[in-house]
Every structure is written in C-alpha cells, then in structure tokens.
Amino acid sequence: MVRPSVKEQIVLAAESLFAEHGLDGVSLRQISAAAGNGNNTAVQYHFGSKDRLVQEIFEFRLPGLNERRRLLVARRRPDDLASWVECHVLPVLEQGEQEGSHYLSFVAMLQQHGRRDVFERLPEELSRPTAEFIERVGALLTHIPEPLRGHRTAQALAFSVHATSERERIRARDGHVLPFAAHVGDLLDGLIGFLRAPVSPATSSALAETGPRRPALPLHP
Image 1 (tube, rainbow, N blue to C red):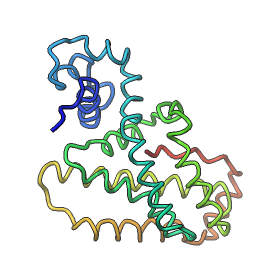
Image 2 (image 1 turned 90 degrees about the horizontal axis):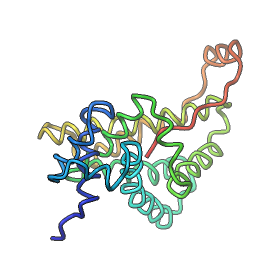
Image 3 (image 1 turned 60 degrees about the vertical axis):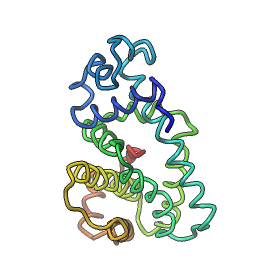
Image 4 (image 1 turned 45 degrees about the vertical axis):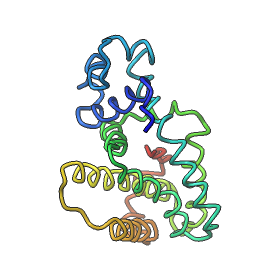
C-alpha cells in the first residue's frame, strides 16, 4: 500500500479537524500534529495559509467526484429530473461511505458558517459540473418561477450534503444507519419530490409582496 505524501496527510488531517471543530477552532500547529508531522511549520511550508489549505481539500476531492459524475452521465444519458439528480448527487452519497472520509462533514460545516467565499474561489473546471447541473434542472422545472426555482435547487443540494454528513458522522461512531441502497433511494425520492412540488398560492403571494431576488448559488461540493 502506497503511503500518502506529506501534503496528502496534511489535507486529510485538516479535513477531519475542520469537520469536527470548524475553521476557527483548529490551528495550523494542530493540523501538523494530527498529520504525524513533527515539524510545526509543515502546513505553512506546503500551503502558506489556512485558506489555501481549505482550497486544497476541494482540489483533492472534487476531481474524483466530478469524474464519477461524468461517467454516470455518459452511461445513463439522463433526460429527466430523477436521472439528472441521481447522476449529480450519487457521487456525494458514495463519498460519505468512504472509510476515513470527513469531506461531507467538512462541507456541511462551511455551509453552516456561510463560507461562500471558499466556493467562489474554486477553479472554474471544478465548479462547472454543479453550474451545468443547475442549468439542466432549471430547464426541467419551468413550472416553478424564479427565484424560487434557483432557491429550491440550492436547498435540495444543501440538504443532500447535510443528510450525508450526518450519516458520515454516525458511521464514524459505529452507529446504526439504513442500508446504503435504501438510504440512496429514500433521499433521492425526497429530493425529487421537493423539487417537483407545485408552488402554493401563499408562497406566490409572499413572493409578490417582497419582490423577486436573485437566488444565491448553492454551496455544494
């Protein structure tokens, strides 16, 4: 078995510590120690700053997630809402099952603290699949007016992250969870039902009173 490089060990240690304690609750020195590096300046040497290290976690995880999405799209040729949601969300659910992964808990922590700036700094090639997914879904939800359509899509993606991060944490404690296939099926059923749900007269009235606003882009891996 190939031993991870020093940089990879630091990235994985940072992912775990950030997921548990948040960005402000972890020092670079603690990350170096958790990575098994006796040099307390190792993180600063390899990454320069905590913000750069956060970026590196995404650059470590997203290529694999996006490649899995690409393969699913090529294999299944999605043409409806359910298949597009599955192709985009399934890789996230699969990531949460990986031993030693704290990625979804890390992303959920960033969402909870509103760290949109982290997502906005991602290289375009890493964020493009999510932007394309939002465009595809939008074209299939024309019965829902903007900005509700964009807001609903963002909420669905955020929920998939938080549901997976909760499962990730329970599994780390050897707690009881649904079998993976049942978890996937139930979550996808819920997301698709939520996205398709008609807009109630009360919601339409509330929107008309406040005026339309541009929905924020989802914080999604």
